[in-house]
Amino acid sequence: MSNKPVYDREHHVKKATGIGDPQCFTGEAPAAKFKVGDQLRVRDLPDLFYTRTQTYLRGTACTVSAVVYESPAAEDESWDNTDKVEWFYSLVFKQSDLWPDYPSAFGNDTLETELPERWLESA
Amino acid sequence: MSDDHKHAPMVDEVSEFEILEIAVRELAIEKGLFTQEDHNKWTEYMHTLGPLPAARLVAKAWLDPEFKKLAVEDGVKASLEVGIDWIRTMPTQFGTPSDYCSFRVMEDTPTLKHVVVCTLCSCYPRPILGQSPEWYRTPNYRRRLVRWPRQVLSEFGLQLPEDVEVRVVDSNQKSRFIVLPVRPEGTEGWNEDQLTEIVTRDCLIGVAVPKPGKTANDPRPVRKALKPYDH
Amino acid sequence: MRHLDIVKQFQPSLHTETHAPSPDMVDDDHYRAYTRSSHDLGGEPDIPITWEEKEEEIWEHNTFVTCEVLAWRGVWNAEERRRRQNVDVGQTIYLGLPYYGRWLMTAALILVDKQYVTLSELQDKIHEVRQRYE
Image (cartoon, rainbow over all chains, first blue to last red; front, side, top):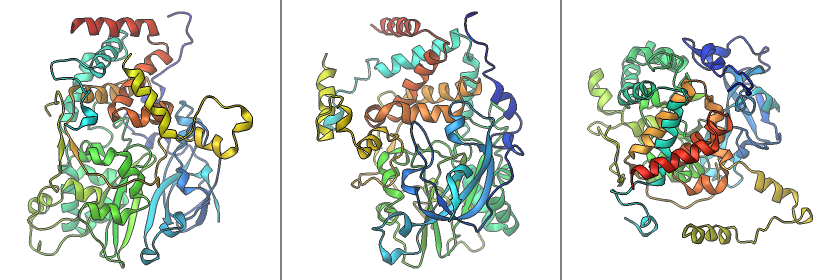
């Protein structure tokens, strides 16, 4: 329809074809701020409308187990904003840090999940 | 059928979901957003999926330490050895939109047991493991596994000693996960096919561990469909 | 109109009356609770249930495929799909409709939101499909 803005809805499809996603964002992020073994903390940023940083992680200490890939953060990509690419990290949390009532008998239990750099700060 | 489902439509009636599904699909095709052929191709692709490639990947890793190293370091590359190309197996040539192309194999040890959940939806490595089971998608599993993993695992029949670290993997972004369990005793000298048989879907999610002679998931109630899709 | 009897039952589950309160009745915790994303439920207490497998309905399979093919053809990316299906639908639909029911609602709405189909076209189509089976 002629009165509608023109938008290449296949821009991401073209970018990812034959390459994959998140592979198609490789090389677009600034240098990774953190490395494997770093002690970090999950920031308590606003979570209005959308995030994939779980509420139960907020403010909790964690250790980087892997630097996994580059991608736009979910908050941006969810509205098709893909210009700002950042590193994602796999992080290990102690269950006893996440849940105050976690049984002390199982103090070794852990949880692993992935977050983009913007949600992380040094502990 | 339980009381709270008594208003579900009879088989010979057409439900609002069915009507809306047909309407959306037909409109999308009429507007040229995709073709019926695209839809058929994706259905054909879905028919090829199941847990077998992931089971074989585990069996190969048990037999070949070099392959195990590759699987843990680069799951996408290791998947090629079991016939799964995370980028090009599917009609898109850029992976499946819902599953992306970052695949991680989480290695158990005698003192570390992984179990996978996606608390935010129900992310699952479909290209190598097929469609997720219903229980995996329930809010209940997603609510409880991250906080009470040992209780949930015990409901699946898996009791783990204190000295085993339980690590819950919350699959929340673009990576998809399977568990590489410890090869059980009693499988000495087994070949790849024999080993593949005991790596069930539940073992790959992490709510069960492989055992010689156990080649199927635990039996569970199956909720019947009104008009089942024939896979 | 029978559905209004079910809608009525949503209210007591909140254990408090909700009639669009005035701002002085909304503190920060109240705000956070109501703006919380419906998908973010890790750690919420719940009681054990029976773990079930499930057969797939034909419409569920078709819905999944439609959503994937819409992404293949660039109508949405997977992150937008996840947001719309799991958050934008709101808590009531999130917990009240089947898993693929949410996917289906979202697939219908994306066509309208992105101006590929007008809402009246969608309504006419639903009406027409319904008539085929009457």
